[in-house]
Length: 178
Length: 145
Image: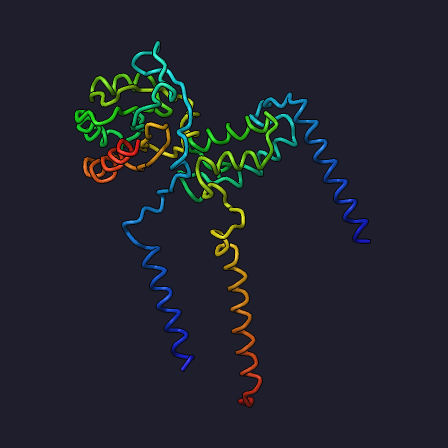
């Protein structure tokens, strides 16, 4: 009896394991951020479009905002740009565009040619702010609440669908709770 | 005998700590022409730590081996923290605070990681058990020849 049951049980266990492990909807490169629920890392960086202006986490505090990590070398960011512009037109929350390891002139050109969805564009040329935020690629998008806590992180290009499904309810909840 | 050995080990460990602390305090520790830390102790710690940290872009490479920009940034971060006299633990927790336990190739033993650490021993035990049973069964069988 055991001779047949044991291999069968092992087989079922493997099927369950593979069903989880090989699920095509699961992106194995997507890592949960340990920063969710924690205070957003502080930064103070020059704005790409206006170097006399400093964009800092301190001045952003007190409002719900989105921080979008992008760069001109990031192919997926070009794809994301259209969604970002549409989202910005809704004027729900300010979108801060952290320009990650980029060339300032190229970034300026990108924003004038493709349009600028950002309320501010802090320039993180050496990627130090990105390390503090746990960024490991672009695009990545964070949602920060009025208390300055990171409440959500989305990896890969933002779409209208994701915005409606993942961001808007959280923004409403953050505002309702505040 | 073993007490002697332990005392020796402890004192040498203490000496190592002391010399490390002293070197960190002097902290000339700039880079040489090859981009290595001039202080050989720091350089060896740098090599060990960067081999222990996963490059999150190409997830099976360490930041010591990877050529991507993020790995270079993280190497710079490790180097700077070493020069500033920070401990290995401080550097590892700096990384895990930002990127999660996944950045470490050998995550510390905790209830969440118990399965990873325990699995090889469990498998070994299971294999041993199977071999034991098979051998015992065969030893009871009559020989063919």
